[in-house]
Structure formats: C-alpha cells, structure tokens
Length: 64
Image 1 (cartoon, one colour):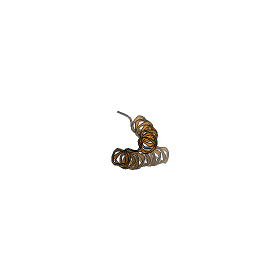
Image 2 (tube, one colour):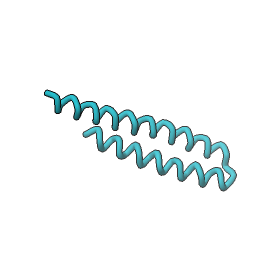
Image 3 (cartoon, helix red, strand yellow):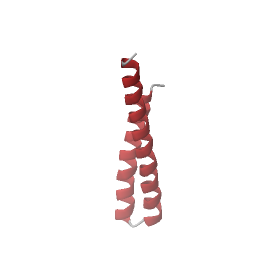
Image 4 (cartoon, helix red, strand yellow):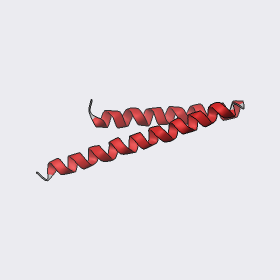
C-alpha cells in the first residue's frame, strides 16, 4: 500500500476522532473524550510521519 494513501487515511482518522472528542466532551463523557483525544494525537503523528517519509523518498528518487 502506498504511503500517501496511509497518510490520507491517518488524516481522516485524526479528523474523525477530533469530532468524536468534541461530541463526547459536549455530552459530558469526559473519559471517552480523553480516549478520542489520545487517538487523534496518535493518528496525527502517523499522518505526519507518512507524509514526511513519502516526501523524502520522492526527493531522494529525483536526485538519482
């Protein structure tokens, strides 16, 4: 599976988990909201990692 696609999937998970966290906090479910925030942080790090890695590989292959 190409890495740009993984970065896109991680970004979608990040956005959806932020929305779920906001809904959880508004409804008063603090414990579940914290879990969603942690998932958003993890998925944003994955998105950033795969994006930067793909960009570096494209730059490296262009210099060859």
